[in-house]
Image 1 (tube, helix red, strand yellow):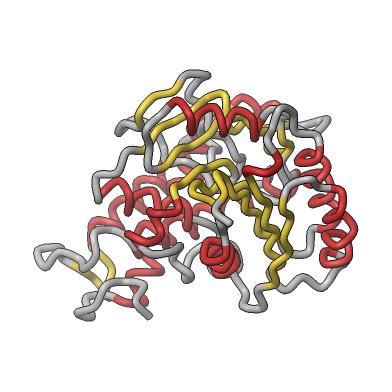
Image 2: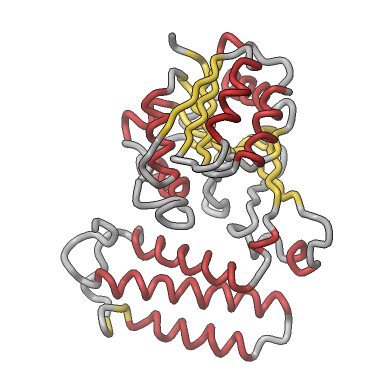
Length: 316
């Protein structure tokens, strides 16, 4: 039976954290249970995820379904759920978020009030105790490793100054997947650190779809202490650089001069960022150069793999 809304969550070995999300879904207020469903996709977990979902299922008044995806990768899990979902609108969130008790209600209201093809909700970081001041102070610079998407409380179309929506809080018409295909399965956790959501956003953007930001569709995302280190920032930005190279307008332009398959201009950028890192006296300058340096190194790594091979980078 067709539903107005399907809520989709992919999870992997996070039973203890997933429990908080399921509790948050049980506490939603003012929601017509007959008009939505929840799909939890277990991406081949080896902990007690299956048992937890089985335990929670009977507590929900709405349709609650458990799916099992043995193939590794969040995108594989999400695509399975998209194919099995009965909703006209598909709401995606993560297995480690903190849901507000009106999250689903506000999604329904947004769907009723607006014409859209996709929408991104507001995501605010939830910092643990004793979070270093440099992490809070540089929230926007660290956007990515710290999950945040905050453009206020209003509804507005996305513009060039706004970053793409996040998979932790996005709403997409199911028809978009029929028209444009699913999430790229070579991207996302399990394959690469992320970017499956960004790539789908850009695909919709290129096809002229109406994408809105809605500030009152709000969740909070706990900041993982493991991400508050220079080592993690380096790894995340390396993966981000790889994604940029994979999706940087397809084939490398012929006029670009390369050394060892790598665009020569990247060597100049790398040198500038390395020098800037050594010459940084301000915390913000140091972090910016650190992140940009490893982003460039990620791009160089990916270009080195494919170079000017006559196929689009990332086609394998």
